[in-house]
Structures are given as C-alpha cells and as structure tokens.
Length: 407
Image (cartoon, rainbow, N blue to C red):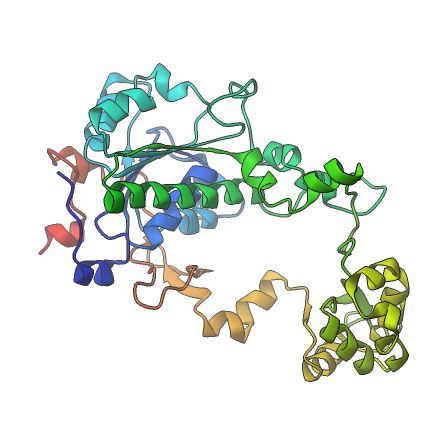
C-alpha cells in the first residue's frame, strides 16, 4: 500500500521523500534520471550485474579502481546485485517493482519483455507503477529495435549537424549531452505521471523517452525554417546565425601566450546600443538600420569585425570589466579549473564538497534546480557494488533505508 510523506517528512527528506525508485539502467541516461530523483529525496535501489556492476564504475578517470564519475552519477542510491537474465534476478525485480513508485530502465526495447519484466507484466503486478523507458528511438516505430547511443540521438535529433565550423566535419560536444537531455525529459515525464497518479487519482503509466526526440525537442526553429523557406541550417562555429551580434571574440593573448576569447551577447536592441558605445562606436549605436535584430543580422560580419577590433587589444579581464560596467552580457570560456574556483559557483553550492565511501574528499557538482522550501541534498555517497544486498535479502517487501531502520 502506498503511503505519502507528510509535509514535515518531505521537508526533512526532500520533496520526493517516500517515493521508491527501482533503477535497472546502466551507464548514462537511466542512471542520470534516477540520480536527479535521488537528489530530491527519492529512495533509489540500483540493480547492478554481479560481475563488475554498472560499466560506468570503470569509465573515464579512476581513483583506486573506481571512476570519480560514478561518485556523481550514483550518489544517494543503494546498490543491489542481481543477474536479470536469471530467474532469481527477475523474481527480485518483481518483488521490488510490486511496491515501487517508479521503475527506470534504458535497455534496448524488447529486452525486459524477454525477461518477463515488460510494461504489461509489471503494470498488472502494480497498477500504480510509473515506468520510465529510455532508448535510442523509442518503444515503437521502424527503428525501435535498433541499438541507440547518445551520439546517434544527437545526430538524428539535428544537433550534431549544427556543431562545429562551417565546411568542416561536424563535431560532438565534450560530454554525453544526448543522454543527459533524454534523462531530464524522462524526469519531467516521471513527475507528470506521479502528479496524474497522486493528485488526479490516476493509475501508473509508461513514460517512453527516445534520445533523438529529446534532442530534437531543443532544436528551436530548425524544422519550421526548412518547411517554410527550404533552409537547412548549417554549422556556424561560435556565431548564432540570424541573431547579432552574438559570438566569441579574440582578446589579447594571456601571459602563457595562448589565444583567449570572450563571449558577448549584444543582440538585444538596448544592449546593442550600450555595447557599441562601450567600444567607442557610437556611429553604429545610432545607425537606424541596426536598431533591430533583422538589420543587424544582415550586417553581422561587419559588427563582429568592429567588436573584435576592440577586444583584441584588451585582455579577457579588461573586456569583461568594461562590458560589465556597460551592463552588456559578457563572459569568459570556463575550464574545469575556472569552475572549481569561481565565487558564483561556490555561492550557490554548485561546487559541493563530499566524501566517498572510503572517506576521501571529492568535489562534485551541486544540485539543481534550487527549491526554496524543499531543496535537494547529498545524503550519502555512491555505494560500493552490492553494498545493500543484505538489506534487500532480509526484507519481505521494499527495504527501509538504514537510517530509518536505526530509529
């Protein structure tokens, strides 16, 4: 029987306190969605393969054999080992799913059905269950059976074609952005489904999220521009086509002799005039043809040249100081080192000191979004593989967190 936390309990444990999540996914999209729910109080049990666990434990840079990425992606979760190909593993999933609020999976469509754990079976077992299914192409359609990774979702969704310099090979972003975008769409879907169930008296439902659709959802006017004008948007480097001036501008090289740049967004009408006055080009500020964006877009190259003629004789810090004083949006291009020491990041708790299960300190990304009354929290570090096997084995139903057991 489902119970709902009181406002006091929710405030103490986060807005999702009392929500039970069973995570069957691996690597990025499914676990990222579960991590977001866990940050806000959901009790997440992560099912991992017995032979090594989630492969993310070994991705990118390792500290004493474990990825530091794992410490971010699996914080606030519990780890239980189970082979989902086995009868025992499938029985465990059914037992936990019978009392769960949410189940998250990102296997190739049809995989859970082959194990007797598909939507129809689990919905019959628990009509209140919300099942988030993340895949490359969705659960239906001619591509549903194909394996899909984030890079393919980014490409099919239209992002990859737009990324890079004109005339050069399309490039990927430096992170698995397609997976993360899909995960966040999944979180939205889960919260909508929980609201329908709990506030509207509905049943649980399946949330079907495709990576390519999630990326495509962010593509702004890409499709209507093609439909209305036959225009295929092309790569434009650091510029923002049709919106001007907005670009990266070269500054005086730093002390290390390396090229340096600032990003300037001068595309608002009033902002443009302030920018032009700040760089000593009042003639452009007063030009009636440049009063609105359509006119500026036609002369974007001229405006970029005027701005860079000013920035290239100044350091990044000098440019930022001058444009801050003029109330023009400006900023440098941050590295990880810049993030780690930036006062804005620290003031908003976005560089979060933590410790891993071995007690070693580690700075991790903070929690977003910021809620004024029921904020998220880092309650405990990422688990060791199978750390919570005993808790689940000894429970007849959904096991209580250890903190609750100790009371």
